[in-house]
Image (tube, rainbow, N blue to C red; front, side, top):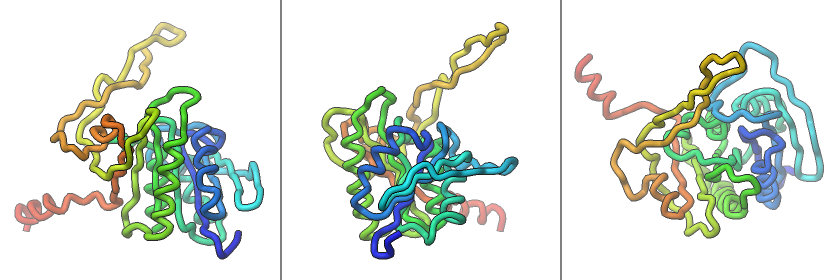
Amino acid sequence: MNKNRSLILISNDDGVDAEGIRQLTAALRDLGDLVVFAPDGPRSGMSCAITATMLVKYNMVGQEKGLTVYSCTGTPVDCVKLAVSEILPCKPDLLVSGINHGGNQALSVHYSGTMGAAFEGCVFDIPSIGVSMQGYVPGADFSASRRYAHLLAVQILKYGLPHGTYLNLNIPNIPVVRGLRTGRQTDGKWVREYICETDENGAPAYQLTGEYERTGPDYPDNDVTLLDGGYASLVPCKLDVTDYAFMNELKKRNP
């Protein structure tokens, strides 16, 4: 590693061979020395899961000047923990997770392994971003996602992020993205979440699916509203999930 260059850690939840992580790596090559440390296969929906009941292993799958790629048997959070604690020569200047092939707007931020990796980077006090592109279309065009990931990476390497804050960037999968807008997480929940099928024995089996139903105020800067309007959405997220206003109410009830 070159001490005069930024050290950037890249991970994801789609696996080390996913197109999104290859595109992200290519987009950030000019910004520093890159270490890709990602799961050996898909780990979508892992959130902040860790592996506690079995061994986690890794191996180097590629190396060239300014880029080293590792594959890991664990979850996205395992990848970040292991890379930072055992593999890297120093704390990275930046962690970028993605590019996830599928959006992580609204409530999905809590389920996403992509965002779990960004969360864990923030735990280590590394400026961290999760990057996701809406839609699951094969052969999708990642050019807008690459552009906005690069833009944010440059900004964060220059200015950093507040302690305990990480970023959730989502990009619509459309021919022309209208720009980048900062906003808030959309309130709501997933509904009609399962399709009932049958297994090989004729017993009921369930496939996760669902639709997102908004339940809160329709603010113009909701991330879903921004994405529906053709903008990339950027939501700052916090490690600290304390509801301070209600904490004070509870103190009044329980002095």
